Length: 109
Image 1: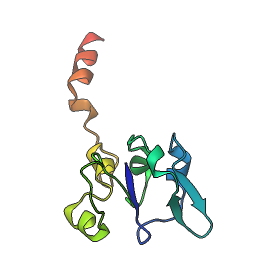
Image 2: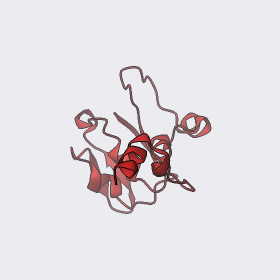
Image 3: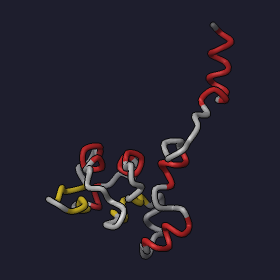
Image 4: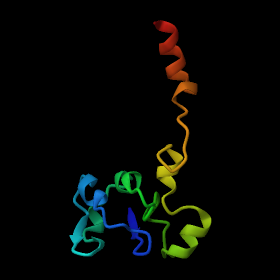
């Protein structure tokens, strides 16, 4: 479930607002988007994935989440970590060519 929009990191691009399939966010003029309907979040990670500033945190197990501390999330590398883990982060190198499915399809040509 979406837990945090970092006011210090957010660049107010509103990509998270646009990609959210369940309309969780509200756009706020001259401010970061607001988490308006948190219970509608489906934990799809689309907002975190598309955020170019790594300003969002989606908790994979919100039942286990008690409090969200931005400084702790940043220090542990969790803030924006989903984006990095799937290869969309800054300075990432594509690993598609080493993927087993890619190798099998390449041999089938």
